[in-house]
Length: 144
Image 1 (cartoon, rainbow, N blue to C red):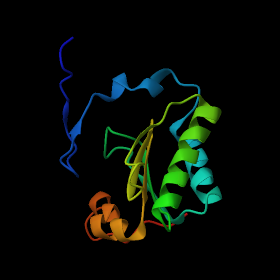
Image 2 (cartoon, rainbow, N blue to C red; image 1 turned 180 degrees about the horizontal axis):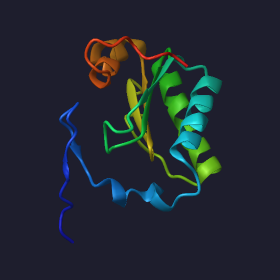
Image 3 (tube, one colour; image 1 turned 30 degrees about the horizontal axis):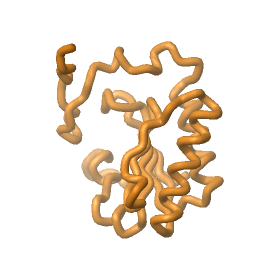
Image 4 (cartoon, rainbow, N blue to C red; image 1 turned 135 degrees about the vertical axis):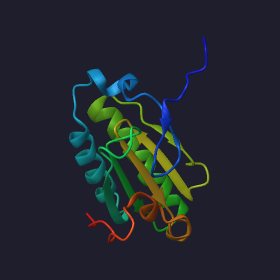
């Protein structure tokens, strides 16, 4: 099997982006908005702080939405992430991919059309992902 060639780079981040049509959600029984709603409910239920959602539609082929939130400790960050992955599996029969749970500083969860970042507050402040994804000069998005 040949390596997949990524179609282009995201103009905002410069990250490589694969072809959108090949994503698994094409034949899914749920919409990106339903996944977003479930993600927001899950992180809120688990007492995540400073929850922000960013609409990526038309700006990125990676996902339709991004959710960024914080946990107060490495243990809470890992717990929020694990529970979210479990809920995605139960509610949507989706196997959410997760990176970074072992350290609990920054966990990335790929919930199909919703990308979720769960940070410890210090790590979130250091990387400032919201600034990267917001248009220049715009205010921070409304918190959920």
